[in-house]
Image 1 (cartoon, rainbow, N blue to C red):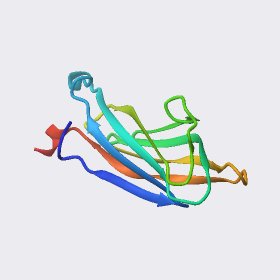
Image 2 (cartoon, helix red, strand yellow; image 1 turned 180 degrees about the vertical axis):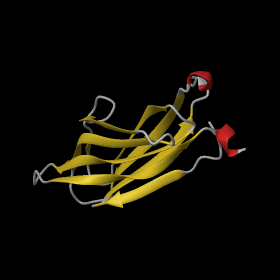
Image 3 (cartoon, rainbow, N blue to C red; image 1 turned 30 degrees about the horizontal axis):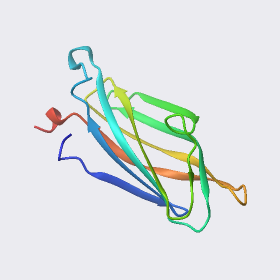
Image 4 (cartoon, one colour; image 1 turned 45 degrees about the horizontal axis):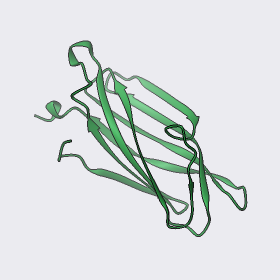
Length: 134
C-alpha cells in the first residue's frame, strides 16, 4: 500500500462514510489498459437510531470520459445493520481503462424503527496510479 493515499470523509444524516483508495499494481495490466484499484470503506452510525444499508449506487469515471454506474443490493453481499455508535468496514475494487479516475455515490439506508429511507452520500475519491504522479 502507498503512503501517499489519504482518506475522504463525508457525513450525511449522522452516517459518516470514509473511503481510502489504493492502486493494485499486482492485478493491473497497464499494457492492456487495465488499471485495478482497491478501496476501503468505513461506515459509522453517529446518530441515535439503528440503520441498515440496503443498496449501493456508484458513479465511476475515467480520464477517457467514460462513466460507469454500478447499482445493487448491499455491499460485498451484505446489508449491514448498524446500531448507534457502531461502524462497518469493507474492501472492494474497481477497474479503469485509464491510469486516473474517480468514484463517488451513495448508499440507500433505512432507519429500522421508523422504516424511513434516506441516501448517505459517499465522498468523491480519486483513483490514481502512483506512476502518474511522477
